[in-house]
Length: 211
Image (cartoon, rainbow, N blue to C red; front, side, top):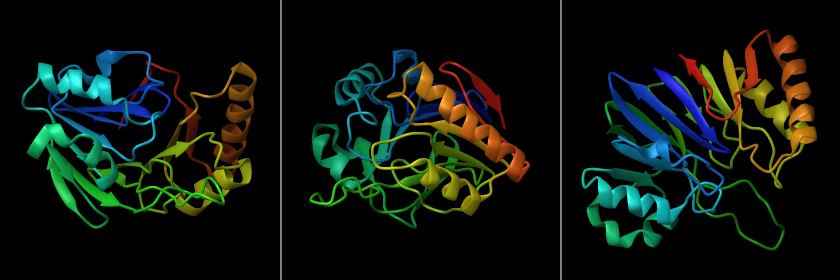
């Protein structure tokens, strides 16, 4: 399996000449992430994880494209009809030749006065877990760990890595950071890489990893 980071929380997974994309949001500079993808997985409805206009354009150009997501996102994409499939915690589906297990229900708390929106994480082929905006603990060899967000702290990041203890962790959700913030994130990841003895790092936009 090949993993390519396309910006912020968006990654593309490729296997056997097939591809799926997770969380193509508005902080994704390259629309090529969706080219040729058979399926799109969307964890939740926030704009940095879902660019509805770009997704609609991709669906119009490929009538076979299918979206798997939570109820909140599906309501906003009602015109897709049965090409949008609502998934919930505990579901397992086949998408673009991958087995996708759905884990989690809610976004991490981000404001004391606002109830968290729905958020589903995706464990792909039992190998790669994308939690969306949650810190759901899953037994996964490869964790796409949120690197920075208004709803999390460095202790949250470290605690999540130590709870999951993956063999590999690639930071995502870093699109709001400037160069100095990225240096801080890289330092935190390096310290945990040494402590946990795992491959923990940030993939630059456009970089790929073979899993």
